[in-house]
Every structure is written in structure tokens, then in C-alpha cells.
Amino acid sequence: MAVLQVLPAWIVARVLVGGALVLARWTYPHLVASSARAGLRLHQGLLAWDGGWYESIAGHGYASSGLQSLRFFPAFPMAARILGRAPGLGVGPALVVISNLAALGAMAALLVLVRRDFGDPQLARRTVWLLALAPSAYALVLGYADAALLTCSVVTMLGARAGRWWWAAGAGLLAGAVRPVGVLLVVPVLIEVIQSRRTASSGPGRTTSGRAARGAAVVAPLVGMGVYLAWVSAHFGDFWLPFRVQQQNGHRGPITAPITAMWHSAVSVVHGHHLGSALHIPWVVLCLVLVVLAYRRLPLSYAAFAAAVLAVSLTTSNLDSFERYALGAFPLVVAASTLTARRWVESAVLVTAGGAMVGYAFLAFSGVVVP
Image (cartoon, rainbow, N blue to C red; front, side, top):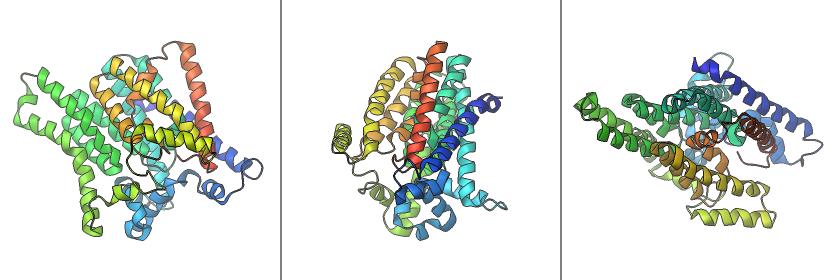
């Protein structure tokens, strides 16, 4: 069973992130600058940063959480609100439970997808471990929506690649309601639809129901997003308000050219304004290299999805959280895993990645790096 096969990697990642939280709390009075922000993040623990926003939305709704909360899409906090009604749980723990179970599901689905598409169980195993221990994968342990989106993305791709269009439509619909970048799943699904129509001259794919299923799979992410934006329009009078809020200074900032964002991060480092900015540039370069590798070694839909996610992640003036967004471009992890076939290479990469994940988690809990 896929879940049992990925369970060791899932457990190791959570032990490492838990250890980083314990270490951050222990060193706070001694090594970390005792700022109010660091104290707040450590107190919030797995609900730090955006987790606090999701907790507020799940517990009190958008109206009570303020207009700033509208940039967080509703599916994840709604699920936590429902689960949080279980006796003795509450919405905060429910967010963490859903996130971690979703991460387990995403890893299992990715194992199945890679094994199916490449016929290489070892590549599938390496991909799961690299996903679990990627430096930004600590976000999959927090009360964040990223793990839920990752599950939806992998299941959508699996459904499209296998010709299970209604499965792809259902997962894509949910993805569009989990996070705004979920709408980018339109790109790989459309590619798979076009390729399937070219190769299939007969069979159920040529029937009316087959065409309907393909069409539903393509538009589902748009519908998932559109329903939420329509609700926002009805209640707040502005269909695009979540994106306007997200583009404010202090959040993602206005849309800008990728080179401008990278230059801004470099200048911030030179002037000592933002230590976290120094960490973005090498990861951007690495991700761009992996996109090229994906186009060379992976199916077109994989590479196009990764490129779309990176393009959106890089067209903002603020590169904070870039590494977390890039992790959602899971084909990059698959591409990287094709380079680790040798045992010693895999071991070196996983040890390095796991150590970096602990470091990033420590800095995030300490209020230094934005997840």
C-alpha cells in the first residue's frame, strides 16, 4: 500500500521539524534576539505565520478576521472548521491534523504517479523522500494549506495522465478553492487533453460523456476559484479583492518582472534590511535549472505546470515564501530525483536537504524567515 511505503519519510520529516521547534524554543532566551515577533512565532508553534490567519478564519469567519484574511482561500479553513467540532480538538489542532494527513496523501499519490508514468519504483521512492525532506517542506508540517494543494495537484495530474478525467476534475475543483495558484492546474490538464485527443481515435474518450469529462477537468480549477471570488464579490463588492489585498506592500506586493524582484532581494541583503532575502536567489537559480531539466526528461505537462508555478511565484516584488511556492511545483522534485540514482548521491542530497529543512524551520519559528 502506497501510504505505508511513504510513511517512514513522512515520520522523519515531522521528527525533524518538531526538533527544530524544540531547539528554537530552547535557544530563544540565549541565542535568538528576544524580539516580540520571535516570541509570538514560538508561542504559535505549528500555527505560526499564515497558520494564525487560517485559525482565525476557521474559528470566526472572514468578516471577523478582516479584509486582509480574504487573500486566504476558503477550502482549507472550512475543512478545519468542520473537523474542529470533534470533541476536544478545536480549529487550530484541526488545521495541523488536516495539513499533515494531506501531506501523507500527497506523498502516497506522488509515489503512485511516478511509478505509473516512469515504471521506476526506485525513482518513485527517491522522489517521495526528496519531497519529504526538501528545505521548504517544513511548511507541510505547519497549519498551512500547501499540503492540501499539493495533494490536489498530484491527484489532478494522476487523473489526467491516467484518463480518469472526473477524478482530475474533482481534485482540480478543490485545488482552485484551496489556494489561488491551484488554478494553474488548467495548464497540465489542457496539455493532457490535447495529447489524448491526438492519440485516441476511438473509445470512450470520443463519446459525448468523454468530451464532457475532459472539459470538466480543464475548467474545474477555474470554477473552484470562481466560486470563492463570486462570494467575495457578493459580500464585499469587489470580485478581485483577494488579489488586490495580496498585492499590497507587506504581502506579495505588486506584479513585477522576475529580474526586478531578484534585484530587490539582492539589494536588501547588501543594505542589511532582510536576512531572509539572501536565501532566495540561489533557490530561484536552482529551480530554473530544474525546469530546464524537467522539459528534457519529463512529460510536457509536468514541465509546463512547474514553469507556470515558477512564473507566478517570480512575478511579485516580494520573494518571501518563494521556496514554499516552488515546492508546489512538484515536477521539480521529480526532475531533481532523476539526478540521484547513485546511492551516495541520494544519501548526500537527502542529508543536506534534511539539514537545510531543520535550519529553515528553526529560522521560521524564530521569526527570521517567512515560510
